[in-house]
Amino acid sequence: MPGNQTYNPERSGNQQSRTGRAYPNGNPDLGYNPDGVRHTDSVVPLHPVAPVMHDYDCDGPAPGRLGFRWTYGSNVAAKNRDPRVQVMQYNEDTFVLRQNVCVHWEAPFTYLLFGNSGALLIDNGATADPAQYPLRETVDAIVARWAKGRGRTRVPLTLAMTSGEDVAQNRGLGQFAGRPDTTFVPAPLAAMKDHYGLLSSWPKGTGTIDLGDRAITVIPTPGAHKDGVSFYDPYCDFLFTGDLLYPGKINIGNDRDFVASLERLKDFAASHSVKWIMGGHIEMMFVPGQYYPRFANYKPYERVLEMEPELIDEALHFAREVQGKDTMLIRPDFILMNGVSPDQRTREWPEGVPQIRPPHPF
Image 1: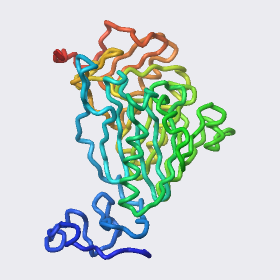
Image 2: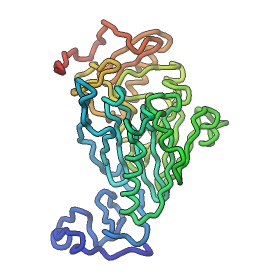
Image 3: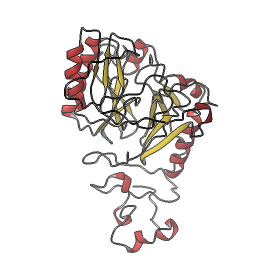
Image 4: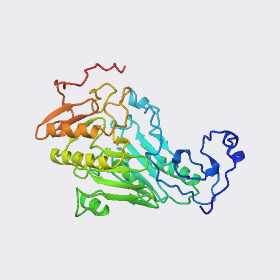
């Protein structure tokens, strides 16, 4: 690759990479992107003088780490001193950000993905005030650090949403107003369809956001919201589903669209490798079927964020069961709310779900 620099173990401060049989940061003798190497272990020059280009094609999902505990709030929100935006780096080109639960009880997740020609921010949180929720400041800092490590002078950023209707995922958008090198996917439904090239095919077609050798697939998935979309990343094999499927109380807006969207995701997952489903929130506890009520700002026993792709089949099966009924249906990893209040409760405990009393949080 033109502009490649010679790897210097002395300057890297890692003597083992020069002398050891195991190379913690990849084998420097094989170049940046040798065949079969997944890029969390590839070598990046310490001070690049030319843009470092990654080959995002690899066998299976790129590795990363999700073994991580999110901050879980406080009994007294005003006394919470955790970061307003918590950042988890899954791998060198993939970041997961979460809003502090004491800033907003829904504590939504946003996702920042990088490619060779730009970056994508999926969703933007529930709070507009940058003093309370400094999303742009945080994203700009990550982008600047990433750009410096890759020898870039500019990194165009695209802002997209799993739903422009979702007030827990569109309030941070205004923080990016006037930001240079920034593209906003429009929120109005017709404009959004046009942007993705889906005016004539919605909801059956797919769109693409090309980040430069990392092409994100846009899948129409209305049901929770009429403008709902999901995003598929073929590098990490992540399926970002927003409010459509996540470990929490899923409020179904249109049960016919909801079932059709899950059928669409099932077909998509059958022909694409999906490692994890990554939703927009966590409301479930680690105890099967137990959940936190709305407005709770202390959640010490949360379920993990990531969901197994097999849960698409389970969600589809029970979505068909509740279709046409005003009901709340509890499953171990999610709850379906069709035609009922978000605060609805039920005494009907489903067969096959262990009924375990969760620990008291105080």
